[in-house]
Length: 447
Ligand code: C2E
Ligand code: CA
Ligand code: CA
Image (cartoon, rainbow, N blue to C red; front, side):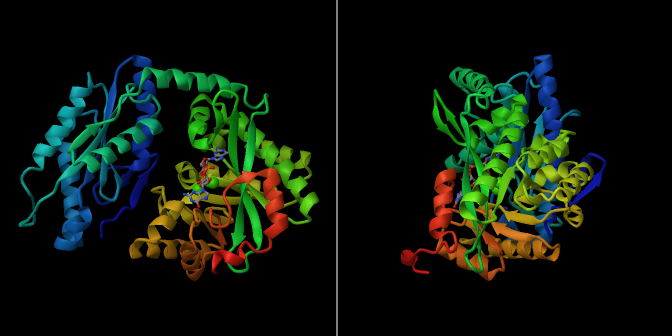
């Protein structure tokens, strides 16, 4: 059944089907090894290995053979690795290799060639000959990044390019010295962004699918940089996270959202919940509960006016601590939303205990469901899962009337996306609420 379930033992979790480490463990090791590589002055490589057209293997040979193929590829990768290499299964048909202490790029390329050669002959799965091929993306620390998440992204991008160009493998694009210098400047500029009042929150409405009523808005950070113009979070949040600057940005966002929630109540006479994104590192901050509590008192915030969006992978990385923190936050009257649901690879058994009020289905699923019935079924299951555990379900990235209608049909509660409105500055948001907040549908939208 191409199972993705993970068995866990402490911090080291494994994929049940192949016995390999899972994505979470891989990333944890990668973080550690990147730090080590940086302090020792060495080099490490990662390879992301994707089985080509694995769906076809499943449909031609059956799921049972498919499972055996996944296990056989796992065994082969494990056999090729050296003692300190780490092999993990990071997706249904995707593996990752971590090669610490490589001398140069050639070493990683050699590994990719070896993998390809191993697969030149079809696999023998209980007497059935199954042809299998793979595509590989390669990235090196520190050449392509010294930051685990970015490095991983670089390898995945190389994989995507390899697929597109029909190459067996590709190495990530070299990062230009200019770009490194640029990141450095960005870090320095970001240091003074809060005190120079260069940050602002834009708000994107969240609207009830049943009656069009506005139930809240997500606060999304924008940086009006004097030298670069308006920057979106994807361009600076990762830098803030790498440098630890993210703590002060989060504190700023909390206070700004609470202040504007109050202003919004006063000017529109409506109660809306403003949702603030919490970065991955937040739950390691022991002062988080005080920080939120103090900000709520400062802005005299009523219960329910603040939601915190927490990504699924974050909540699951250390569930005991995260759940304890969430419970305290809820006791302060804060709503907890699980963000980007479905994109992590967390175990469902944790889900049972998440103290959350809301589940946000990631926009990739909403986009994919329009093209594939299987993805629509996934969304349906996520909606049911949320409801089964008493959560409100919000869909992100609702761009078309078709998506809206289908999500409503699946029982989704709240929609957020460009169909209703793109994120907008606070004043515009208030106008939006005043003008058509009661019902987002415009007369000419044809629905
Ligand atoms: P997210 O939490 O998934 O936020 C939703 C993103 O989807 C926003 O991008 C929003 O502009 C975009 N979006 C809205 N409607 C649509 C649509 O119909 N289609 C598509 N394709 N996209 C849509 P944005 O503002 O660029 O934010 C990107 C990410 O940055 C956010 O993803 C969030 O993870 C992070 N982020 C934003 N603000 C903050 C913040 O204050 N603190 C932290 N730590 N992270 C933030
Ligand atoms: Ca979010
Ligand atoms: Ca999201």
